[in-house]
Image (cartoon, rainbow, N blue to C red; front, side, top):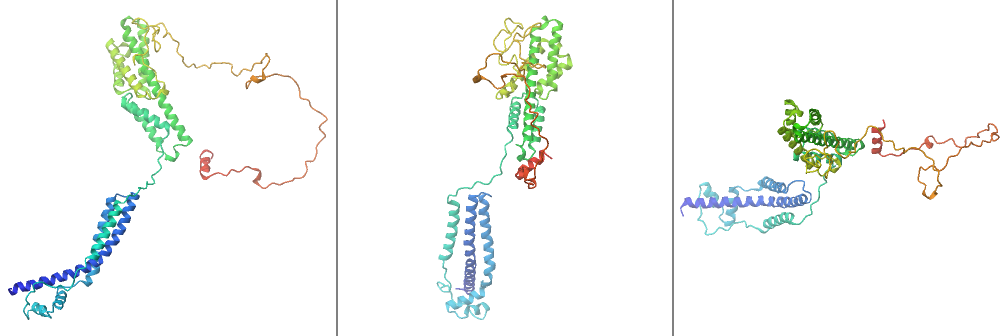
Length: 450
């Protein structure tokens, strides 16, 4: 073999031996770090699977980062024992019995010895220990990721549901928006009021003041919806009457129906709950042009259809809330026949009362509220003349009336007498009833009794 190849052979063998020695020292330090990281990582995996505070992939990332840091730390700790190529050359010379021939050849004072057919390295690998540590570490991590673990529910923050009154109003608004039965601005105004009530701390939502405010908002919204329904029904009734009668009505009757239509339209434009934008715009345009009472037959027919459509949308949106008691429009769902003939009659048909004629009422007397109280004499006291049956006497029945005087014994008074000595001076506030209140009860009393 040429001298150049011989020198390269021995130099490569020297570097290979140095790498083996250095890798062994590094592996010695890293296997301990590997086993410790695997055990800690397994605990972390089990904990995250039991209590998912973070995603599991972040635990795997942390284990990988720990192994990389462990590799760097193992190199730092083992570098003091690393061998240089010169030290490895001496170890190789001693193992092969070459004395100092390799060192002399490297220094240029001798020739390189002939390469053997197979080098007998002075060090032998014992792979059982690192392979066992690596296998145990991997098995621990796999078991931690595979073993069934019941996930523990996190202590979620206690959610306080909004008061039922506000939930009911929200449901109304959602249905109204879905059916497009009212103006968007009207809905937004109510939503702002709901948001103001819910801005309070959730712990105060069910206090007396908050519940009272929620109930008032529900009642106000319900009243506005009832007013809108009534105005739609009144306007539709007046528009249909004007359109059906045409020019046959006297001017006085036309003016009366026009005033009814205009009043209902004005109430809708200024009410808390306004109809949808299309109907509202149509009412404003017609009122600004010729007045609602002077519209043509086609305009009245179109207006009546729009009113019926809006009233029907309002009823469809609130069909699951019968407690609102919305007014039924005459043209919705085919209810309320007008009686016999093709003109407004006395309401002899089935369903709701008819609209009636110009000089007549609707046929059926409506039950309306009266500003004067109806006196039923429920508080009047009356004597019972008949013989009483004591087994059937009701509370409040007058049994008898008698006229007499108290019998006073004027000789019973014998003058002033001594009251005697004090038997017990008391213990300060012992005679006063003292309440033992909880801190929360004291805070409640402070809010209402300052």
